[in-house]
Length: 171
Image 1 (spheres, one colour):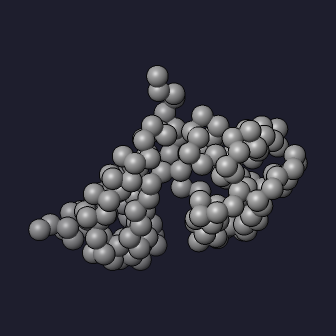
Image 2: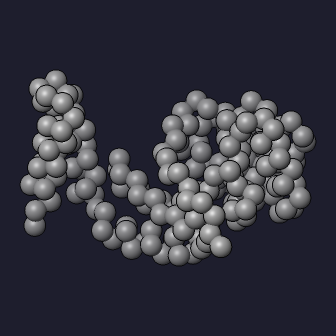
């Protein structure tokens, strides 16, 4: 039985304190991803109750499920978001498979049901989203200030950008 759908969001982690609990390749991968997003990352291979204090987001990837359970309980008490690698039932948020092309990020989630399927779909999406799309995103970003200044209201800007996208991607 599936749980409720997740609310999908892109987080601005610049300057936010984040904690990775665990060691090995998974912990290293999670820490690198957080650092790439501008987070201030602390990595601990051991955990004591309260270590999550002051951290906005925590990723637990210890080999010991009971330790991961403790981290999640601590995060709940402290009001921190917690992801437990490969254990969606212990997560307050899950991490999608992501394909990045410049400013474009496409995330695929199966709601924790199958990371392998999400990774396969990400690979297929990578064939569709090309550097040309990333270039277009930057061109459109550069037009945003002009559009906000010169076009009256959301609908006019939406229609302007929709036409620009259609024109640029017409094959």
